[in-house]
Length: 123
Image (cartoon, rainbow, N blue to C red):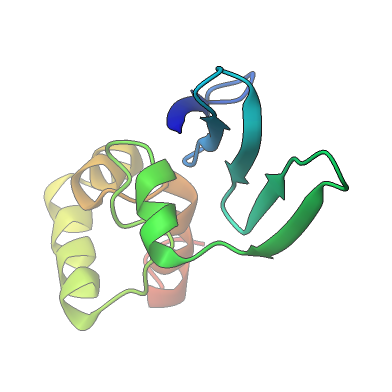
């Protein structure tokens, strides 16, 4: 059996996570099963002559790592005390440049703004 993997970034390309599709093919190159991995759900389907078997489950963290786009390594992770300290320092150093802070901390701009609001730096 061989596996062909396809990543789909979406139409706008702005999502932090890609959709991963694994196609499992037999020696005759016919599709035997497939898996679709998204941020919160993974769908698996085994094709057979009888009845296809479909299952849906929560996506696990190791799978999320595979579909997270480069430059967003901390998306979905909790903020540590060190992360908050880095955010505070970067906010002061960059004079509040959200885009630069986002790039440096590998988080979305939305997440940066949310944390800054919680800390009282922005309204």
